[in-house]
Image (cartoon, rainbow, N blue to C red; front, side, top):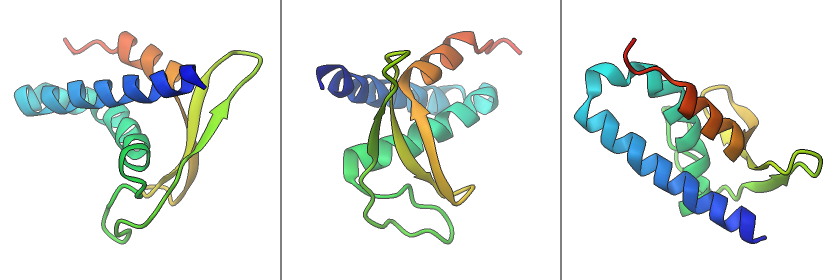
Length: 106
């Protein structure tokens, strides 16, 4: 339970970091956009218990389901992605690995 709670705080911190990067380096942010989208759709229901608002999907109540893979120890959440209009699993470990592999010099 503590690992799950800390993963939520980690996700919130990454969201704020990405949001700041988007504001400060908007021209180079394009490569981070897919990751930012995934972090955003997980953050919104975790923080505000609402679906990330997009055209055609007003903010409605949404409580994400925690996911824990016993074999790998990965923590994540099942959240609604309004772009594809279905539930997806967002894993903290997967997001961290993808973030660390991004080459912003491209």
